[in-house]
Image 1: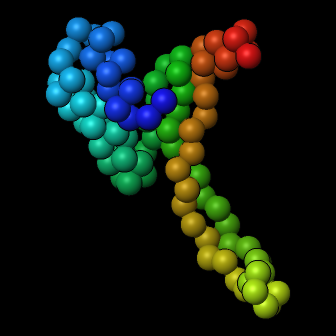
Image 2: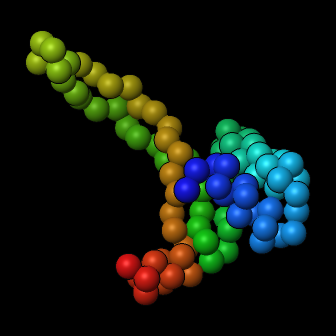
Length: 93
């Protein structure tokens, strides 16, 4: 499913027109990004948690030369599935 299909499903499920559903979807994504940028997390009970995880510095290799290089520490977005989502998938797959 891509964003267009998701917006269409949201519009149908919530009795909205497509522009309202697109605005709701865009707003939700913007607010999640803003909260993660601020260092917080977004918890959707039963569905899951969006959070930032720290990845420490590590050694890597240049694939062309095989030379060892240092990769800097970074922050990555992560999603942790909630209990209800895990159960729903466990019973369907």
